[in-house]
Length: 356
Image (cartoon, rainbow, N blue to C red):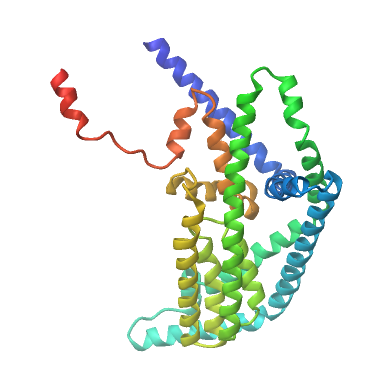
């Protein structure tokens, strides 16, 4: 038993050391890895319309050109919106920052009038609303920088789509029993495609609703906050909250408390309707991940790959979970990543006692 225990401990330490090395390598290679991962997930998303166009009779080359034309158009639109909006907001930020300092000083004066003495610097060190707005600008800026690699990403998507048709044939020749691994790969692609497709539609609906809400209230840069809501809606659990904070703060600075409360209430209604009712209804059986794992994956992939890792945290974790299910010695990890498992029915316990 002692030898077996030492062997298990040694194997666990080796596995943990290998995991640390792999994660460190991924973090160091993030500038190269992130565009490739984006290309892979874009390929999974556009594979369905690419196949659909071919089934409608279009040659593969023409179908690929149509898909690429749509991708280029979407990339140009998003890049234009992000670039112009971030530039305008960055230029106006000093004005908003000065207004935030005035509001913080007003809070300090009010606290002093009720006997709580503090300073503006101390208050801003604990609750600086400007940090939330800077974080939003940084997220959009990082996405804009990623779009500068759009040409390389599109080229990678082209090669992935062209290779996808011949990959199953080559894999069957290269490996024995390839059908099982191909089936697992197909399941992974379908799960990611389903998740990303539903998330894309709900994020687009959220962005349109946010733009309409902010335009009606009169908040500056509604398109900027709509793009931010679209991107951050891909981040599970907290993305919609992060997207709401800068818009609410800007409404407070620009228009006052009443309009800020109206914007906050509007964001709440949008997220409840789309995130609580519509998205779970069309997501089907769910992600196959526990809520805690979804949140931890957000933190982990964000640390390893940056903002893009946060956007892709759920698809990456789904792929890792399916990969862990393959091997018997790692299947327990996949079970731990999944949602809760129903317990054994109580009615079965008396029968077990009687048989004993």
